[in-house]
Image 1 (tube, rainbow, N blue to C red):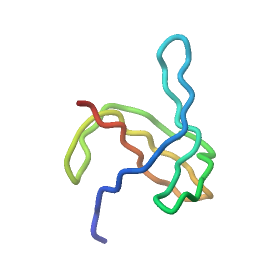
Image 2 (image 1 turned 45 degrees about the vertical axis):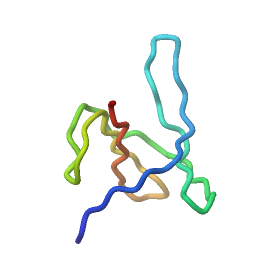
Image 3 (image 1 turned 90 degrees about the vertical axis):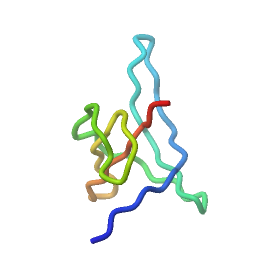
Image 4 (image 1 turned 135 degrees about the vertical axis):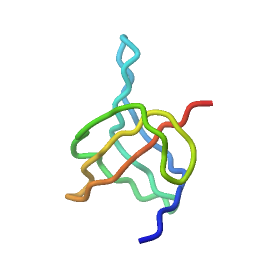
Length: 71
């Protein structure tokens, strides 16, 4: 399986403490997917380049990695 990076829009909640929780992922065709559960979050490098916070998410029963890259 070939890995690839795709930039997507994300609707998120940011608490007063600064904690960020992704809520919805918006695909390039405008389709919105609810993030059912955040399984884990940790600082990690992406296997296809880049680094930042990795959110392991459950979306419609599928496990997906979502990265928030740092500048």
